[in-house]
Length: 240
Image (cartoon, rainbow, N blue to C red; front, side, top):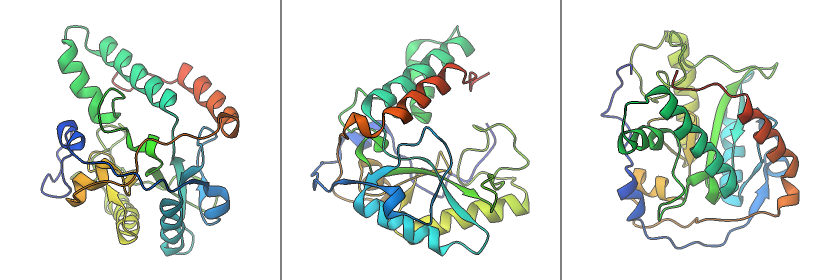
């Protein structure tokens, strides 16, 4: 793994997330296609729903970007079942990549990249509080925030060292835009931001979180789920 500046951002171990009291305020999920006209959907697997306040914050963030830059939504609310599928896929991939490692070691690696579903604190995406976002250009293509790194995981830490000047400028543009609207960033993933969940509480030293597990009518995301299931079938092992 490439070196990164560990003095920036805050670690968020599972034990810390589990200690956060949850007082869900029952704010509804809203359709970001309606609440966030300035945001572009970056994947057909995205279920474009988030808590109302989160959606409003994201729209304000999108409007902050300079002309020619757009906020691309790569992921938002996830049903618990999708979270579990992603976790199982990552664990299977880790076993294939490191057949000699024990389960505890493999789980530690997997949990760095995807929140487990067997803990007290629910995964941020399942609460409607977390968004994965990219920078897009006018044509809807991803703007580079990772050069010279080509491996997604090596480039993942938000404050990685050694980025090209332009990539660093773009990455910090995204980070500063999201933080300015009140989001907190997972320092292990430059694309992951949240507000109001346990991860946000740990990162900001809040005494409690106000978004917990929330559900959505399945018919509202049936097509997105089918796309997600199909995409996972052909997804390469990220650890190889």
